[in-house]
Structures are given as structure tokens and as C-alpha cells.
Length: 153
Image 1: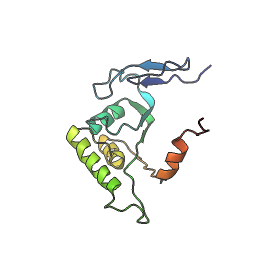
Image 2: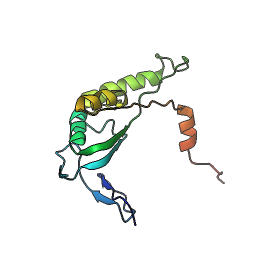
Image 3: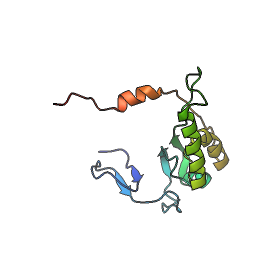
Image 4: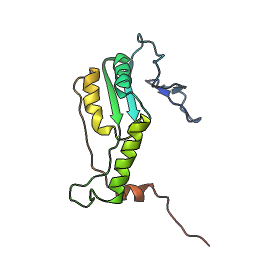
């Protein structure tokens, strides 16, 4: 018997879900329909850069719907950089990132939001905010995410 019953909000839920998981089709940018009298113990927000127009509002609603002592976890990436000058600021990829950032700001849904999460969470009222930044090799991601090639006739 499951000890917890996750509620997942999504625009496109997976049809294969465990019996203790319940989906609610919803848009986190609208007023939340969850009763404040039944707060969440844990809220997980992942890779929503480029999807949210008003991050402070989303985090205020998260704060308001989190139980005392509850946890929130935000996971987002940031633009590619290097600490050994192997990624020059004048490269075409760096220019692509700058142009993409400008376009996402004009569109009203910034993509590169990871570096802003800690400040926005504190401004929303969260306490004890911890930011964990991990270096990830871009080339290893390409290798890991590529399907194996066995050969073709």
C-alpha cells in the first residue's frame, strides 16, 4: 500500500501511471485551484525555463500552497560556459545563446532562468534556500542521450 499519493499537474500526462498517482490537467500560470486547506508537502518544478511568464507569481503560489516544513525543488539549467576558456565568448554558439536569450525575453518567457531561482525564491518568502550548481559536460550529454548505432545494410 503506497504511503503517499502524488498529484501531478501537466498539460500532457503520460497514460501509463501508477495507481497511487493522480493527474490534474492544469496551467500553473493561472490561479491555483488546489485548496489552501490541503497544502502540499513537496512541490517539484523542473525545466520550465521558457514556459513561465511570471516566475515570482508562480513561486508565491507555491509558497502559499506548501505545508509548514514542506519542501520545494526547482531544477533548471543555464547557458553553456567554461572555466578554462575552451568556450570563447565570441563563438557562434555563445552568440546563439545571447540571441536566444534576447528572443525569449521579448517573447515574455525567459529561457535562462536557473541563475535567478534562488533570489526569486527568497523574494517569495522561502527560507533556508540552498542552491546547488553542478557542472555538466555538454559533450558527455550528447553521448549519453544518443541512441546506440548498430549499423545499417
